[in-house]
Image 1 (cartoon, rainbow, N blue to C red):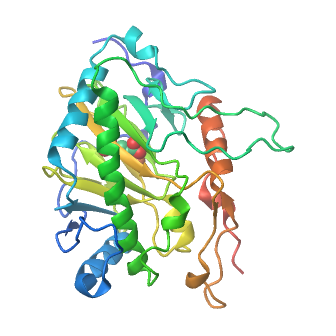
Image 2: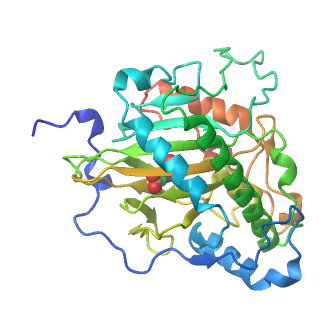
Image 3: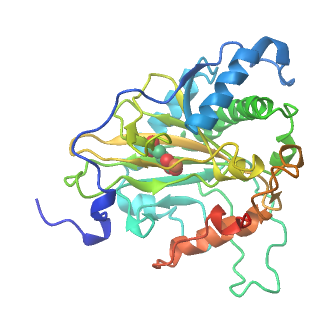
Length: 357
Ligand SMILES: O=C(O)CCC(=O)C(=O)O
Ligand SMILES: [Fe+2]
């Protein structure tokens, strides 16, 4: 076993502990009361208990798992299989669809989180094609880069594109139903958030965490919060995702449950809800024996969306805690910082906080 490349080494306070806490996990929520056949918004009376559970989970954990979600298992298995086959290709083959400074989608093997390299490789595609791009380049934009948002499909495996698109459709439906539940739990109309996703920038990421000979030094994915609205994550049976428990700051392992999804609140819900629901840090630990695969779906608004605390949730006693964040500008700033590796922490929602008196 050689030396580890220092780019992967976490500062000692961020390395995984030798003992992992599995004990009391994130809430498990049964979605069977929901009628997934209907495109109509949910009749509130039938699901009051469920709405309460979702509200409590969002507030206390920012994370929960769902079962009976109606995403067909065969579609999930098909994308999981396609993902394994894609990552098993030669590096040369995968590099043909590599992300770069202009093309934001595709394969990438050199991702950093907070300036430390992650022990993983990824593939990103957008759910809605083509992505609606407002004229983003503004007079005050020094770099004037117009990012390309087109999906870059590999030729191999041949079923890859179809498997990805079919799964995306199903998981997107689930994400919208979950947003109805989140809206209800905040005392809002169920379809309050729907308009933000007409020209959405939601994407799916395929993650592959290869076995790592240094699981005590490196992470598959460093600690971070998801910047979007809501994440619907499929993890395999290996395990490795850890969530920072809000009550005491401990890292808790999320135990894999067959055919379940892990849901977490992203930064934009935190802003809309004026800190009612907060996005929570999570990370991925690696192991020295097994490959691990996961597939997050990131629900994200249109690039032109101005995100700010909702009027219904603010008043004189609870004034807005954030200035307006333009999603397109926020994303662009984050993507630039991914390429310019620097010691400055990248743009975060707390930079938009309005100081309280
Ligand atoms: O692989 C996982 O379990 C988590 C992935 C994740 O948090 C992310 O890609 O943002
Ligand atoms: Fe994440």
